Length: 320
Image 1 (cartoon, helix red, strand yellow):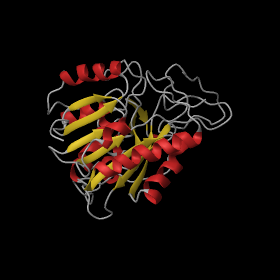
Image 2: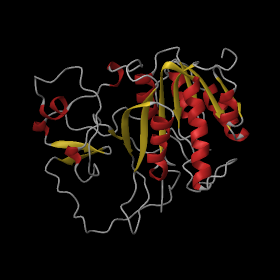
Image 3: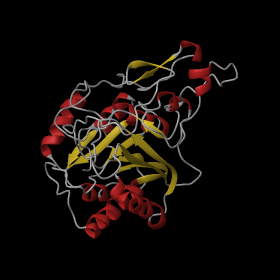
Image 4: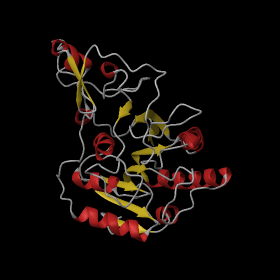
C-alpha cells in the first residue's frame, strides 16, 4: 500500500480495491450513489434494482476484504436501499453493526404527499465485534445536565452521542442536542463557505470529523471508494491520517487534488463542531437555534400553517 497512500486513483473502485492487499486499511468511509437518478459526471445513477444490489454486494465485499481485522466501515446511504445494504453487510459479509445513525440535515426538499425527507442513514460496521477502534474522548459532547441545567453532578467530560427520535429543532429547540445518534449537521448548501462548488453532494467536514476521530488514529489509513467532492480525504489529511480514494470522474479527481493541495495536516475543520447548541443555563432564558437566540418558552409553529420551501438546493439526499 505504500505507493497508494495519500493519492486519488481515477477509475472503478471495485477493480481498484481488488488490487489492494487484504487487511491493509484501517477505516473505510463510503458515500456511494443512491440510485435515485442523480446527474453524476461519469456514473449512471438509475440502475435496475437487482443490478444496483449486485454492485453494492461487490463493492462492499471488496471493502470488507481490504479492512484490517480490527478495521471499521462507515456507510452513508438513503432510504431506498438502507435495509438491503445493512443485510448485505451483516448477513452476507459477516460485518457487525455497532450503530445505525441518522444524520438529520437542513435544506431538504419539501414533499407534497409524504413527510419531507431531511435525513440520511450512517451505518457503523466493524469487522470484529469486539476488537475495533473507538476513541470516545475526541467525540464527547456536553450533556443536557451541563448545557441546560448547570448540574454539578454532570460528568465534566460530557457524554457520548446516542440515538433518539426527534422533532425538527426549530419546532422544539430545547429538545434536540448533538449528544444523540440522530446527528444534526446542516447539509453543505450553495452559500456555505466550505462548499467546494464542483460537486452537488458534499458532506460536512464536521460530520466526517466525528467519524474519523472515533474510528481511526493518527497515521492510520482512511479509504473512500467514492471520493466525490473529496471531504473524506480533506478531513483525513487535516486530522493527520493517511488517505486514499477512487473516483470515476477525472474532472472531480483533479478538483479534489486542488482542494487537498491547500490543506496542511492540523488545519481546523470547516463548519461548527456543535451547529445547534442549547443555552448554557436555564436561568439564561434562551436557546440558540440555527445561529439565532429564541426564547426558552418559544411556542412551536402550528403544524397546519403552510411553510415556504426553497427547493433550489436539491441534491443526492433529496427525493420529490
